[in-house]
Length: 394
Ligand code: ATP
Ligand code: MG
Image (cartoon, rainbow, N blue to C red; front, side, top):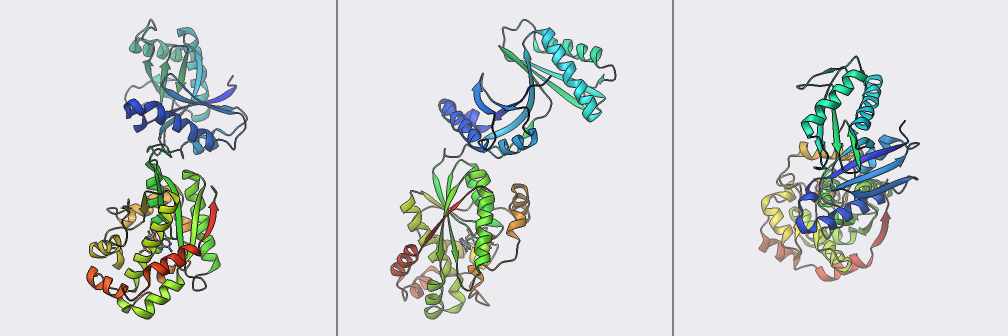
């Protein structure tokens, strides 16, 4: 009788980190604990080079798997059963496990994949496989062995004090545990791209802080709520974070008044970057993150990106730079932000959008028009007017 849920969690790349391995694993355990905090009766610990999660039997196994798979650094998860490391106990547990499989999934064929992590165990891995296979055949008369395409691959992992039996490896997203790679300030719009870009950087272990620009009253209160909801979805992966909300309208009005119309977007983009950089410096973020993507729109041509980049000293991470839009959309669907992103609300970038934006801006010319503006004063006023919103996981 199963008395608790046991999950074996494997870290992918984390395991490759040599001397830093214990640090990365500790961070990973901490992250898993944090994401499972909402459940009572769960323990997370490291043992014999694996991470184990044990949960009260009354808890929903799928809910727990869903949460664990959201932790960056997790390569795969296997719901498992545990028994003593003796051939008799393993045989019995394997039969019981397979009887359940027959009942629940109607499986007809199987193959045992045995592994002896404890080299002192007196029987070799292939021999364990054969013996447990024989026990299963004896205990489950309807089953046959199929080594090529079995309905169920039964993994038997023999360790020093216990043996673990499981079937699936459920894939996680991989990546590195949050908090192992600095902090970035993400420019978060309500679109499809920037949530995905933020997610990608968080997946590599980066802590997130965000800035969102609006043009109230040209953009609505509801548009801003949408962005907060979107940010909450991202926070289910990267944890609670702060979002700085800034009204860009005064700057946009200055640009429209003083600069050539076809340059509006590029000037707006440079201001967004400058403001984000100020906030990033203040909040201890080492880089900026955007959802920009080569050639997607006028402001993301190679020439436009150079002009945008040169507005700041800080490195700008653009993790989506070489992806196609369809791939970004697929990723957005996979991580669960797509549906929210496509809700139709106005964005500050679409306010004062020029009919024919420059696609190949020249930096000297842009700097010349920009010199008509009190750039530092405008940036400072914008930063001073910020509102800070705490974003919690949805
Ligand atoms: P997205 O789907 O992320 O909105 P997009 O294709 O619409 O991207 P742009 O509107 O040109 O592209 O914006 C490019 C990037 O600039 C965004 O990915 C985001 O990082 C940043 N950005 C755009 N609008 C805003 C905003 N209102 N607030 C904060 N950042 C923004
Ligand atoms: Mg946008």
